[in-house]
Structures are given as C-alpha cells and as structure tokens.
Image 1 (cartoon, helix red, strand yellow):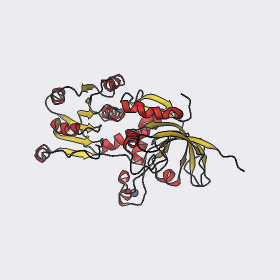
Image 2 (tube, helix red, strand yellow; image 1 turned 135 degrees about the horizontal axis):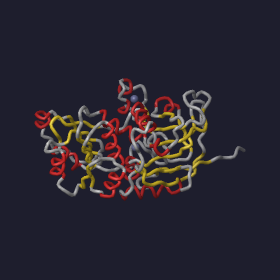
Image 3 (cartoon, protein in one colour; image 1 turned 60 degrees about the horizontal axis):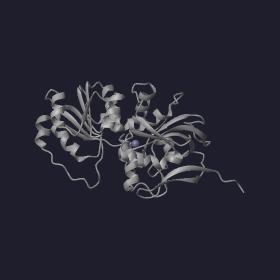
Image 4 (spheres, protein in one colour; image 1 turned 180 degrees about the horizontal axis):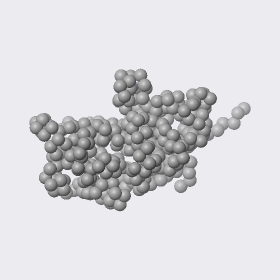
Amino acid sequence: MQKKIFRKALIWNGKKNVKVVDKLFPKISENEAILKVETCCLCGSDLRTYMHGNKRVSKGSILGHEISGKIIKVGKKVKKFSKGDNISIGADIPCGKCKFCLNGQVNKCEINLAIGYQLEGGFTNYMKLNNLVLKNGPIAKTGKFNDFDKIALAEPLACCINGFEKCNITNINTVTIFGAGAIGQLLGKLSFYFGAKKIILIDKNQKRLNIAKKIKSANFFVNSNIDIKRKIMKITKQEGSDLIFTACSDIKTHKKAFEIISKGGTINFFGGLPINADPIKIYSNNIHYNELHITGSHGSTPAQHLKALKLIINKKINLNGIITHKFDLNDSVKAFKVALKGEALKIAIKPNEII
Ligand SMILES: [Zn+2]
Ligand SMILES: [Zn+2]
C-alpha cells in the first residue's frame, strides 16, 4: 500500500470557526501544478467570511487569496510555468466565456470564481493550482524577485489599481481616503504615485494613523472624532477633495463623502457595506451642477494584478511596514482574533515557516 502524505491547511468550518487540519497532499493531473506557499496574507474579506460565512465558501474550504510561493511540481502539459518559478497569485478567476470576460471586464465575471472561495486558497503549505487558475487566473512569475511578503501584496494593490482605473484622475491634487487599514494605506501610496499632492487619511484608530505616518502612506492624518468636513475644507482651501475613496465598511463615510467632494470630483465606494445596510440619500442636483463622478470598484483583473506586481518588483511603491504581524500556519487561528481587534494593518501567514 502506498504511504499517505499529508499537508496542513486552515479551513473554514462555519461562522467564527476556523481550524488547522491535516489534508491529503494534492494529486495533480497533467494540466495542474503545486505551489509551495511562502506567504498568504489575511484579507478583510477572509475576516468577513470567518464572521458571517459567504455563499461562495462551503464548510471545509481553505481561505486566503493574497498569495506568493514557489512552484514545486507541474503536470506534463503545463507550459507556462516550471518547477522553481517564483509566483504571485490573486483572487478572481475569469471563466473566459461570459459576456463580461469577453469584453475585458473579467472581475465582473458571471461565474465569479475565486481562489479562497470556491477554489482552494493559500492558507496551506502546499496548494493545488488547477488548469483554470493556471490558464486564466491572476498568476504571474516574479523572476528572481523573491521578497514573498511583498509579492503577496500584489492582490490588494491590484484592487487599489482597479479603484483608480474607475476614477477620473487627470489633475488630481487632493485625495481623501476613509479608512487607514491596509487598503486605505495602499490607496494612499498609489495616490502619491499618480501625482496627488495632498493625501488625507481618515480613521478613528489612532494606532493605524500612526503607522501610516511612519510609513508615509499619506501626508495628512485626520482622526475621525473631530469635525471632518471642517478639517478637509481647511486642508483643501475650501475647495473640497478631488478624489475620495471609502476604504471601510461604515455607511457614515458614504454620506460624508458628498459633503467634502470638490466640483468635478470623484467618489469611489471602494469598501462594501454589510448586506443589511440602509440606503443613503443623494441630492442628484449636486451631481448635476457640480459634475460629480460617483463610482465603485470591486476586485481586480489579471492585467491589474500584473501592473501591481510590476510596481512592486520595480520598487515604484514602497510596501515596507504594510505587514505588521506574521503567524505560522499552526498559529493561524490566532491571526483571525488579532485581526478582529483592529490592531494589525496586514497579517501574513507563513505556511512553511516556524514563527
Ligand atoms: Zn484580498
Ligand atoms: Zn466570466
């Protein structure tokens, strides 16, 4: 009898219930591959699934979609990747066939398949990459660049690039970002990259604002316990903010955004709200007379994942300090508790290390 080989994985087992289990080492067909996962970061959406479940995630699934690692085995028919390749992987897998995939809006795919949802995620030491992931997914080689913690951040950075691509960013002077979590801070760093001069980060969590100050994710830091409108108007010399991102799940920020937007400005509702959130009232005359742009963004495309990866590899965006906590796989249940406290910016799980 053949000896069974196991791997370790963190699985979601129902609301507020995750655990580390032994799973059989994946077998692959000739179109598949195996990744030795070096880093998989914990995303806000993993936390939401942990707390509330998600109809795309069934019990026993492996979460995690901000992934980096090394390919250790490929099937005979896999041509794009080889053993030893350093790899970055994101979340959304285009089906390649629906109307959205065919017109390039692949993050709105009707099938809406994603790694760490219907497909197995990166909270495991060895991850199976199926044919669809290898063929259509946000998966890219990073060459000799092997700073795996930074490579894993290509996915959230790609979502932020998607956010900017949905906005009018010609001549942006001021960007205001509600939420100084990892996404808010990545949006801040991209704002510098896209030429904004005044980047205002707002949060009630002073610890996060302090981290942002230290790692230069913005140049104005506003605690939300003060009169935000007055403060933003002062910083912008009464003009209001050209571009506003709501990178948190607080409906108050959606309302506030309309009070601080400049003429011709853009609001991007970046962070989703809880499913039962109330509607908000909008004075459409403001949109009309002030020619406002109201948009949203969700997820990212493989092309944006590649753009993000290039910014990281070419050191155009400095990601030092975004990851504030690291856990090995055995301790990964603790990571969810730490994340819920709101003290960490980004937590990395290191499935093949002892920390
Ligand atoms: Zn994510
Ligand atoms: Zn599709």
